[in-house]
Image 1 (cartoon, rainbow, N blue to C red):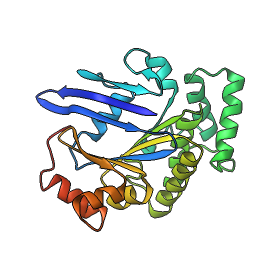
Image 2 (cartoon, rainbow, N blue to C red):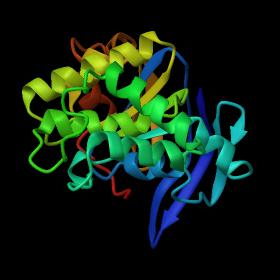
Image 3 (cartoon, rainbow, N blue to C red):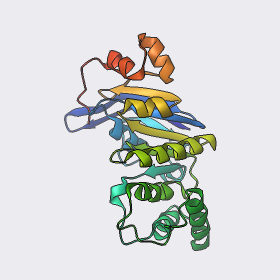
Image 4 (cartoon, one colour):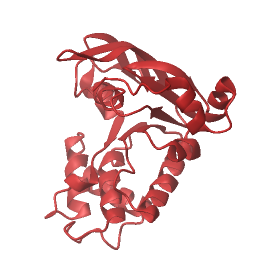
Length: 244
């Protein structure tokens, strides 16, 4: 479970987050939806502890990220940009390295890595260098390091950006499996179809604030619109915000 309470963050002269509050529950996929500049990435970076809020708190399960950062981060898996992989490492080496960073011993890291590679059907490519991997293979490798330490919460920032159709479908299947296993999955996006297809709960942001939240169907009913895209436009109007 991830709970954000009244978080504010100013970056330079821009109020990137302005009293942001929402909750993402276990066993559900929560989408952070907003136009470019709404504050989505700033929100996720603050939850993960990469940015310190000016005010407010973020809880990861029962841990306050500001008070217990190590314990909080152990409950989190962060899906990075797949383009940032270390090309000279194999998926096994890459995943095992991050398992050790999470605090596992050498033997624990090896076992957890093997289980994760098997879970993601990666054993055939486990010992190949990442250089030359397809988008789907890179995406799986990036996801492997995010879940190797079995976190209860997974955070993804625009995870399908740059992925082809097959890789996007594969990622959706994996996220559904994580949800069904009881994980709390949170991802940001501005792709309506992606959010509508995946999310149980949607948090709509603009100018660093939550302007509406609920299931996709709830947002449609709230705005008297037939689909999420029309509901989104009705909620934010034509103002795409100025947050970072």
